[in-house]
Image (cartoon, rainbow over the protein chains, first blue to last red):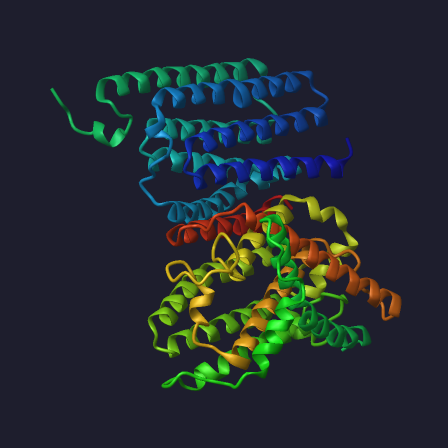
Length: 220
Length: 315
């Protein structure tokens, strides 16, 4: 793969990661959010595939395929099942901060990510490390979604966004932390989603709602 | 001031003034066809303008010079933009004015003049329309600036002619994430600024929803003709700007009749294609609630900011 094509593909997948993170913040319907999340999984897998093609490494190719199956296939399917179980009244997110303000907050987070990651980029300037701010922005936006959404399912999406960002930063800095570590992290995420899905179901059965604001007070 | 710039400065305003009512007519005709109506024909806006220009000038009692001068300011600022922005030729007649900030300021000046005229009439609708327009432009203007700025970062100049000719020399830039993000942001703000669906509906007079129509409700006769012509010109200027910033091919780089002809045909073709695409998209869109509009515009502002950020960190 030629150098310019590599840089262009890397930039394009980075742009797709950024765009999908913003769309998750922008849209209200959970069904659309889950679809966008699947697209982000695809972009992440493409990013790793570009790195794999560059290094001609079989291990990275395997990781890319694994990411594709897990993040663009299994996790969105699990989320969709949880959404279907939640019923028609729970199709929209109810953010604590309104959408316009959270989009402007995301703009500030982007600049923050850029400022914070400058020392990291300067350690080893290359096309891959220059995309670190993208991964960091996804992490920060994921964290923002996690703290500003009320519904359990949208908080779950925020958590997964956070994890996508961490994975992206990991691959951009070190070209992978080894197949075994990556496998362990992926299984961890999968288990967390499964446990949280069961937890939301139990919550709804007990309280009739998954609005986490109602869970602040103790009841008998 | 180069010969190419002078020729462009003469051809472009003629093309914009003559063509923009036809563009509006074309868009209305496309909508009519898609909705299953016969439609009034492409030349109808010109016939309307001719009828309005023959009428007696009238101004409501109690209005001041602000009301009477607003249409002139609107037409004049748009004409200056039509002269300087690289539509047909890459050189500009008045090069310092072809700057990104000057062009955006000129376009915003026209909007502000119209909003002041809406307030000047003292009617409920005028004030309502003006306040809505100000809400929209407060988010549109920074987005316009930042989105085009994202393109100017790589060029190292905010001169629009320099941006266009650098894209012409390096076509690979068009599919970079910077261009894509900036293009999406620019499309959203152009739709908002020119008062098209889903932000404003150009074909209704329903008091609850109108923005642009509410401001110009008190105009009649030649003044109304000027306002209508100016809004048509603004639409063509914005679409032309969008087309040439991202797809500048065909633009004239030399003073030969053939190059100029190709440049003119290319810009007319690109603007017509964009107009038809916009009109056909409008058929499938419903108007957005007014309180959701800032959300849409904040989203496009974020996209333009991401474009600038990406032009720095994905460089």
